[in-house]
Length: 427
Image (cartoon, rainbow, N blue to C red; front, side):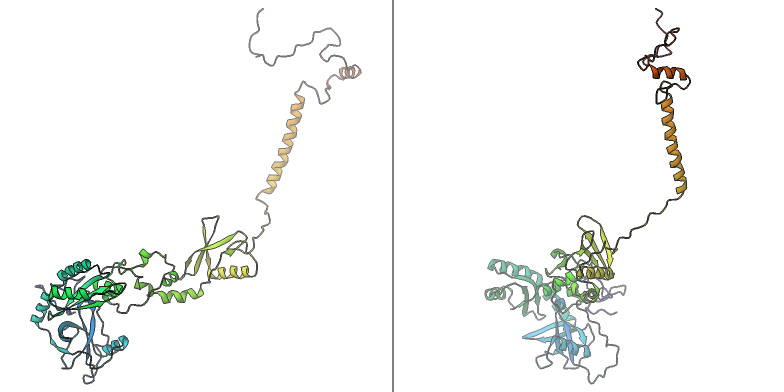
């Protein structure tokens, strides 16, 4: 690809470029590049449109007429007519596309369009480079003068004409500025004719250039020419956080890229229901937390919980229809809670058998504990001596420990606190 900015090739034969964010092979050295998609088509030479689009410093473009039928190529440096002098620019577009651009920008094809004098030579290019060296010192000095005059304006750029007879000062201001005194001081300081031109903040960012948060050059300085109004509703439709620091560009206004995908989001939002309040369920009120527009999934959450429940758009419409009828679903995913019948566990017959023998074991323990207490039954009777039992019934006041025969002494009861293995006292 040829170099369209006038730079030459180095010793190796490669394009040197103009050292502005890339080489000329990538097209990054030219601002506001235009692709002529009609260049490979056979267009009648006789009826060729004679108006050419010419690009100047920082992407500023104007239309000039090729009255002398000069054979021009996109990227050629030409000397054009301007009021009270001449200027140097580069051809950016020609042919039938220029006619469309003029209709788009509402530029009339009349005698007010200035003409192209000739192709620029090497001397013209060298003179233009010398004139450009005056721009930066003039910018610093002009800002000092504006600061001394206490004018509420911001001077962003200065463009000198190629014949070094005129300078255009680009500024931005919120209110009307009286710069009559400023023009006198600037004309006396730089010995040129001064033109003050007010631009918007978006145009200012386009002239200065820069790198956006996406990592690429600003759209307004590379290809974007028409600045449309950007509203905060564009961020709401795309579910973006309304943070001014993230939604604003380098110009301080809302980013132009918010409008790029807005129509796609608007088409996808037609299937998303509008949630004006919480969803009413038996579990409680579920509030909308997040919406995935393209996947058509909506997340809801209860106030008492930190968990979000994803629901399809069809399910949300069902719950909204139930709420309008005065009904409430059991939960977000179910209308009615299903009551499940108890199911017999595995090996339930073995459990019943274990329970049966467990109860029998308890009865046996009770019987054993009753037989060990003194060898008597619940009535205190001795089964082995029925005669003694009969005597006890006849004489209830008789001591149970007394011997009825009187022959043998009663056996002493063991002391539960005494250790049976301990030897007795020899006394």
